[in-house]
Length: 223
Image (cartoon, rainbow, N blue to C red; front, side):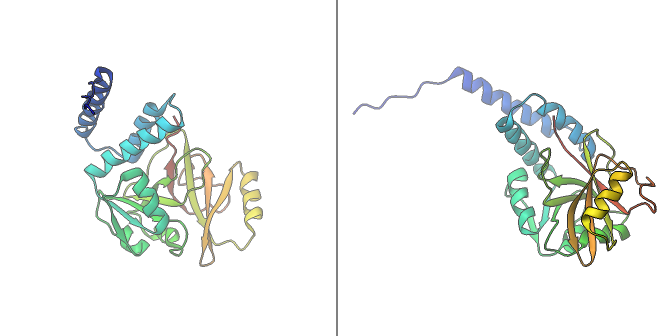
């Protein structure tokens, strides 16, 4: 049986070269803050369908991982990091170890199963929530991304804050709704509760009274 030499697809070659050129262009861009990167990614995702969006976010994540190390704590964070950033990552056993990762590492920590580590961010002005995965619109976050600087508003954000209120989740959500805040329970541990607020809530926002301790904001690259 004669072997047939495959034909070179000019269209495929052109597409692969365009991809390689885009990667080289992105790799030489200077490092940017999480909110700046989110705004750029949101523009890139605009108009794409679901599969294409997933691929673009994965490529962006792997490019980010090539520039700065990725440290994760918790099984959900490991899976989410592998999907977004690839397999080049450091796995640690505790949230405290992950929080100690040197900048400019990408730090991803499970919301559940590691205790109320997110409450301890109140005593860490050098750490704040800057992202959450999964980051698809309407998705429930399973892991939080932590950075050294609090991110600014991007127009499609989720803000996280903690309370030790003994009231039920439904009662707390109702109180927040009366203040114009849309809240969703995100995690609980050690008698503390973490809620996710729709939108970007300023650090000194007085709703409700007294103002809730704020951990930071996570951006949604909705496109």
